[in-house]
Image (cartoon, rainbow, N blue to C red; front, side, top):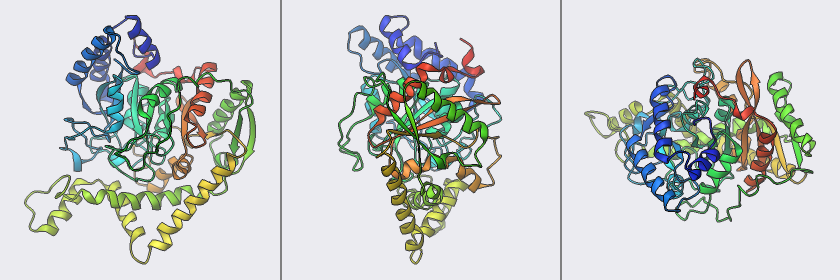
Length: 486
């Protein structure tokens, strides 16, 4: 049952092959059996999930089902959920019980989704390995000595191990796509503003974007159909019509033009990673797509620009967690200054502190123009590169990550090396474009992914391309030992 996709489970529920309660109990049992090894969940909401499953069964029996009725979903612990702990992977929010529910969770619940629990993540979404969580590192189900990627590593690992059939994630610099590649699942980062950020704890407000993670592009389309849409409570939510993502999945891709940015295949790239992505592109050529070379000359500046802009926004967003307004408060402070200092020192982990310091420095008097303003100018150049490329092509393709999952702890003391894990994904966030990572092969038993980048609001097109690829291949159906047992 757990190796079935959301779409297959939806059909099984409709046919009466099993009930939502039986399905939910199955995944809760798998979480109880396997998550001790993976650490992919921070909170499991079993009682609430079973109550939702019973309501879903009643809705199905009455013929009132929605898009996701009866389907179990795991939510990243960055989304506020009323009455349930929302920690964002941090000691700072360890005891925070959200008084309201994020729009993404609310919309999916309105379509009948069951919440299995809240998944582990890098603290405040800062990290590419899921090692910065206050609740301990998440393990990669393909090799328990390796990282699952980050920051949506808990979501990716639980999907890879088939502990949940669908999950939500967030992508600030690649945090859906990079872990999707490292765990052999499919993950979509929508256009900035396509999915509401209301109720999602902010890391870098001009970059953060929620999106779906699942076994297949078809499942991502199903979830995005429920998540997308304008939200008047989010000033960055765009009032654009939601396309029929499911209806576009089987469109013919004959004549589609795929652009291959030369910057995504540098001489320094692992040859096997490049080979897997080139093989995926050739498969799409067999389906009628045309391939052309393009150049994104400014994309090489993505990482340094991102690591000025994102920490600057983080230093501002995280100032509210001071032990007075929100977050952990130290014991017995001597005075107000001691309260602020110790509450933040005790509540935040090292990576969060590092980024707050970098961001505060970049925004400080005398350095703002030299760093933050210059980084924003570079961001515009990167965006303009993509705009010019999309005048010639329909989609862009290249590797999602420069390497397979690395060993736990291998980069913990080398933050710059860790930051380079997102070298192919960050430019998309700076430009605000949609992109999807899909499984495209293995190297020494570890999965690799290839990303498809689309023009603004062309989520339907990149889901269509990925779905066609997944109909012609079976990389996305491969599961580790956790998924092999029935």
